[in-house]
Structure formats: C-alpha cells, structure tokens
Length: 505
Ligand code: HEC
Ligand SMILES: [Cu+2]
Image (spheres, rainbow, N blue to C red):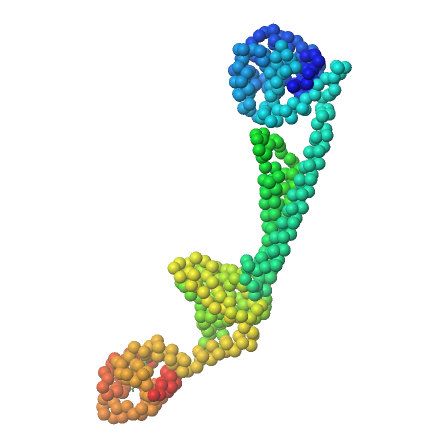
C-alpha cells in the first residue's frame, strides 16, 4: 500500500523519509525493532532524517509528541504491548502535521499509513496515491519536492478553480446588473416618495449610488454563498474535512483596501451633498415652525402696521424659492420631516438658543404632509400638518390676505369679543348677563334713569371705557369689568364697533 511493493525495506524508508519526514519517532516495546530501524534511518541522516526518540508505550509516545515534535511516528505493528487502535484514536487530536506508519517487519510492504490531516477513510486512498515507490533500478523515482503523479491532477484542479471563479464572477455580474436594473426601473420609486425639493436632488443621487453598490455587494455575497452551497456541497458518504487554508496576504490586502477606498469615497460624496443641502440662498422666505404636543403651527413675519407676524396651522411655501425654517418646540423634542423634501431637522424646546434652522427649496407645486419624525407621545402619529407649495403670486396673495384679515376691524372686533366679552354678551338676541349685541347698533336703549339713547359709536365707546356712565334698564351696574379702557387698544375698540355694526337681525 505504501510506497507500493517496495523491493527492499531500505528503499521504503528512503522513499518515505526523504520525501516527507524529517523528525522520526519510533514506537515499539521491542528494543530490536527500534534499534534496527534506528540504524537504518541513521544512514539516511545526510538526507536530513533524524530519529528524535524511541518510546515503548502510547503514553510515552503522546508525551514525546509535545516535547520532540516528530512529523513521523513509526509504530511496531506486531507489538502486542502497544495498543494500535488507542494509539490512532489519540493521535488524531491535534493540529500539527503528523503522519503515523504502522509497520510490520513480517511484511513491510503492508505498512499502513495514517496522516493526521487526511485521516478520514475515503481520503487515505488518495493520499496513498501520492506516495510513490522506487523502481527496480533502486533509484528514487521521486526526488524531494518532486511529485510526478500529482502534477497533472494539480494542473487540472487549478484549471477547475479558475473555471469556478469565472462562473461565479459571471453570475455575480448578472445578478448585480439585474438588481440595479430593477432598482432603476421602479425599485427605488417604491422605497422613496417623489422628490420635491432642490435639496432632495443630491440626497437621491447619493442614495441611488449607494444602493447600486449595496446591490453589487449583495450579489457578491449571496451568489458566492449559494454557488458554494450548491456546487461544493458534501457528496453522499464523504466524511472528509475541507482543505485547510491559512491566510492569504494578497486577498486580505485587497479586501481591506477596496472597502476602505469605497468608504472614503462615499464619505467625500456625503460631505459634498451635505454642503449642497445646506447651501443658503440670498433672501429666503422666513418661516417659524413651532411644534407642540401634537400639532404644528407656522408663523410668517410680515411688514404691516397692524401686525408683525401672521400665524397659520397650514404651511405655505412659494415654489422654487428657498424657505428658511426656524424650528422650535413648546414642550418636548419634535422633528420636522416632509418625506418629499428629504431633509429633516429636530425642533427643540429651550427658547431662542435652541432654535434650529432648515433650508428647503420646494420645486413642485402641490400639497404635502409634514410629519413629526420624533416619537413624542400619545398622538405622535397624528402630528401631521398640511404643507402647500404654491406659486410665488399665490403665496403673496395668501400672505396679504392673512395680513388683511388680521387688520380687518371686524375680524379684530370679533377676536376681542371671543376673548373678552362672550361670557356676558350674546350675538343671537338672547339675554345674557349683559344685553345681546344683536341689532344693538342704532337701537334705542332705555336707561335706568328712564332716559333713552340711540346706540352709536360714542355710546359704545363710553359703555366700554366708562362702563357705569350709563346703565341699561334691567341690567345691574358694576358687573361689566371697568378696565377695558386700559386693556383694549383704540384699534380693538374700533374693531368692536365695526363688529357690532355687522350684527343685524
Ligand atoms: C361680566 C359681564 C360682562 C362682560 C365680561 C362684559 N360686559 Fe358689557 N355689559 C355688561 C352688563 C351687565 C351690561 C349692562 C349694564 C351696563 O350698561 O353697564 C353691559 C353693557 C354693555 C354695553 C351697552 C349695551 C347696551 O345694550 O347698551 C356695551 C356696548 C358693552 N357692555 C360692551 C362690552 C364689551 C365690548 C365687552 C368686552 C370687551 C363687554 N361689554 C364685557 C356685562 C359685561
Ligand atoms: Cu412630535
């Protein structure tokens, strides 16, 4: 089996030791076996073969393994004192390269060889084939490092390896291309809503590129994995180990350098697109965005005699013009996020110092929805506000309309009524704590002193700021608050008059 039919025992050792082993340990309890072999092997010393020790028991042999580091153990097959099976069972454990030869002096050509790294039964045959023997001329056919029978095999297996790599690479390219095609044609559209801001552009570009790289990596990993699982799966009855591979510097450098370069490249692109989303246009539209549990409100500073800002529960933005949002919160952290705009920014409590800014240049007219992107409690999911992107002229019209509304005396008067007078005065004619305002203007009022008066501007003003000057018959004096003259502005009192004027039955 081993060094097939070696013509003489000397050549067997020669072949075996020359080719594979340098440090030999001899295991036999018969001194003659050991000494004979020792002498034979000593003659091979010039070839580098060295008998590092002789042992008589399994335990000694195992101890010698650690101390002497042999790479070949020759065991006396006929020695009853050595338990061969136990020997083999225990020698299997371990990692270093080690070969055991069970040698019978009665029939040296029947030597049995075990190799720790290829011990599995089915591989022993292969392994044995690697051994060669000496021909009749007693000249070694095989010189050290010269493995004639293996050469062809190896060439074939190298070829095979390349074919596997080529096939797997082609599959990776096909799968990656398919994924990218799918992403380009609707795949990412399902992931992201339509982009509607100038800031979305660099973000989507980067996102798209990243997704393509991710698609390629996905293909690379999954294809390789599935290919290995299918092509290199364990054949039935095969109990062998896989090939042991220790390190591959070139590969390690490659798979460190390429990802490093890719990450740095993407960091650069990320910085670039971040700078683009932060770019400030001159004279942006200013909006104060205020979050509070669980609603948004928006303030637009305006240049008007009546008011300095208008407030709205709906956000208006002129299209194609940058809006700068000053974000704040009245209670806890919220976060401004309109998915179509892509950019996102937290709204923080803590007053002016904590105001955050966000620049958005909407590019498409339409209605979008602002969502709070910070889990902020019970009604977080309902913290949604309408965002209307309109043309500049529509925006201006809306803003002036809001300003006019606020400076409209009737609106101001109604506002004063709602906040100050409603508790005592009705506007539907029914009696309250005080007289109803319905049809008040121009009415002839009878006073407690019996006189009558026609309600006009002067009378209303007097009733408000000098409450007790005239008391309406049937109503108590001193009930209506006395300080409206100080609390209400002239504009507001004028508004009240205009408002009362509108209340006709
Ligand atoms: C706490 C109750 C109360 C509130 C609040 C109140 N009023 Fe009066 N108001 C009265 C009573 C009572 C009278 C009738 C007695 C009188 O003429 O003073 C009256 C009378 C008037 C009159 C005269 C009505 C008439 O029929 O001649 C005017 C005008 C008036 N109130 C305006 C206002 C305005 C404006 C406000 C809010 C800014 C206001 N009141 C808030 C109780 C109230
Ligand atoms: Cu919130």
